[in-house]
Length: 326
Image (cartoon, rainbow, N blue to C red; front, side, top):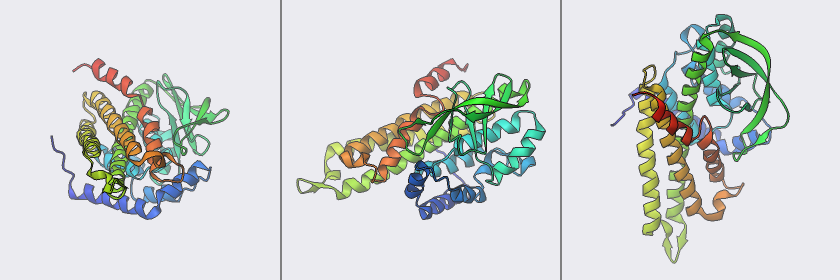
């Protein structure tokens, strides 16, 4: 099945790509990993409309636009943008559907404007929140209750140097009621979709970088990209990414239908596997330089490994695909 973006969607992706290229995200990633949480790019992304994509119109958003969200997160993944962007978008869904208008009115306009960084402990996941030390709000869902959460203790190190996961404890109860579990489930599925889009973008960036390297690196008097074994590996990566991409867009199109949970889990499996294959081949083709701190592609390789298991492992999502009634 072929998915074709319309002119506005393509322009949106191209605009984000230009913005992120001009920003120079490798330096930003390293600053973020060192503890410098400069929000200049966060504000620029908000001005481009990224955070409005998960905020209801009544709270200054664009309404939930899953296809545009995939377009945006693909570009953010392609440039390995750091920070709890997926968590903030998922939190916007949680706040928008939790049936607490006062709570939504307090936070959702700030999210849309890029004035609030929000982290979220995903339901059914160990209580660790991404960048909870830098977030204006961290949300924790427990049954029919939504709590603010506070970081407790030291960060848990991730393979991605820009991802810092903090154990959290419940603070103030913010909302409660039967709408909370449904809102949490919707937020989780939105987070899975956004993470899947990130992974496809990361995989595509690694493939492009590896192809360029294979054309310039020479062994035995020839560019290594001329060797059949290298070509086969790169072709397999491209095939995996091209199979994953329509699954991610297909999941976006099924948003709001009974099939969304199944489709988004299938997309996460395909995106995780395809991006992981791209990272593995990138490391094999580059050799040891591909994992050195000073070499920019190492940031992409390590982010792929971290996101491979974020928002549910491939095994968990395979199980969910099988469990969801058809």
